[in-house]
Length: 393
Ligand code: 4PW
Image (cartoon, rainbow, N blue to C red; front, side):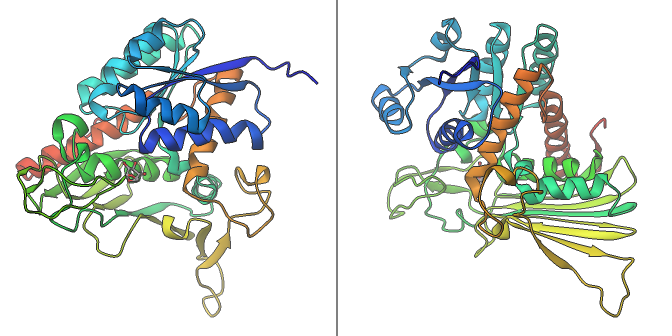
């Protein structure tokens, strides 16, 4: 039987941690989901040809490029998937959109608000010609998080009063963990704030459906120099600590309080020094008729409390979000068999391909990415001058 679906030809820029996550998603999505178009892994691009070639062989990319501009010139590429550090996002994404390529861009959207504004503008312009752009906040595609949004939108929480969100990791706790691009402001824009804080900002706005209007923030760098050389694991790595040290130019931790545009208040915390917490992306939302709570370290579970139940027996219930009726789950395994980190990336591909085929704007859009960027910038400004900053939302 032949496949009558139109090919959607992907060119991916970058091939490291995110490149691997995206590669598996492009491979897996068409195998598990009935997609309206057929993604083809047409080209992977990286400056180190040998390394990019290995990734191509491992994941099944059909060709290799060493300059992203070459991808834009190819007429056999429809989508540019940007998996590089933040300092390159704006240039690649804007050029790709102008070349008529759909864009999927890793988070945070950019390193500055000005870059994010230019990207959102380019995306709005491209949308008029049917060209789509999406920013990669994958955690919102964890079934339990998608379910949380649905519960909130369907009124299960009543009036939302509190949002409590944390993203806790500990891979920088060792002061001899070597420098890497995530610790370089030029490359990453900011540290814990943009790398992981951006996720909880997106998740809070996604789950509640409201926007963060103002923030008061505090940022700290606990370890100000680190070894220049060492073994680099995906996050972290190790070194003897004997050699040359270089400056850490980003925050190690960022905390902030916020007001949302619906009158609720929020408390946020992002750190890579929370010893024992590996990838604890947590959110709790309290409303007048109920609460929900999620922790990525227990990612197949959503906790829900119904404030209307008899107090004698009421309590948070653990909903195992693995039923076929739960978001995204029907394509996977029988109830109770659970999903993992990589499935968010697969669901992202499913949603992007569907939006492109339907001719609709994908979510989160570059405008959503810009809104997150404004929150990050407001937290930085607030931390610097000690006053509350508004986001424009
Ligand atoms: O986006 C985040 C990263 O940059 C992630 O989801 C986790 O923290 C994994 O790596 C970092």
